Length: 379
Image (tube, rainbow, N blue to C red; front, side):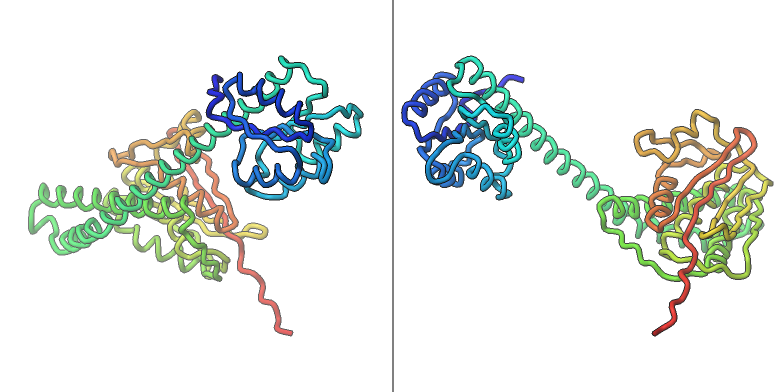
């Protein structure tokens, strides 16, 4: 990596004026900016004022020696990252070890060789330059991510309300305008519009929740919840959706199963898994939702007998870097976001999400939730 020496400042610290002068001449000839100090106390003051990119620090000095100067600099957050090269006539291994323990980055023995000195200094400056690039790129990346997340949030939030209103109107029309009143063709168009709006609303809801989760604005509200009642409520909502594809939702749910987690997040997972199962099932088939207790957790499974997922595509599921989505049995579009959200929410609730699938036979997606914590008797 090519560096421009004039962009970097080096502080020379030595109590011998001839050493300071020699080093200053050498580094100035290399086009570095140079500042000098004749002792440890002056060096500490100059570091605060000049903020050098590299310090050449003599070890043997009166008042405070180079090791003590380095120790003080490393104790302060604003100066701890400044690299230090010790200049010393000490060659003992214990001195070298102590220098590194004090935060030194390199040693140059006196009397020093000019070529070696320049190479070691250039190496440290190259590391400083690389770190600058990394910091700048990291800052730029963070700004890009923040801008992206804000855009996603605004899109999802601002569109969710009007799409929700359209969804409600279409639901009312479907309920009050049967095919014998408006004709089969018009009723089919209305049904398609209703389903499309439901899908868009679900996508916006997932997008908003995913964005909030990624930027740390989702709080997990742990509470005791009745999984049986919660699952029954979601099934009731999706029964009408399944009926449009002549799909039956069968349930195996105990009368009561208490778990411990965030109600809205758990409900979101079940809703997404049921929606996917219906989307990828053939007309006239069955979807099974099962709630059961296994060891120390509750497991909710949604099984379909639809198109299934081939082995190659299975590897892409549940990974943000291999974004995977496909079309349903009636060309319903998927974003691939729902399953990522489910996995994220399952883990945030102390559980996990997994699946099994066979191409042409169907899939089963499951997730776990911790069981209700036992009541602790009051003392």
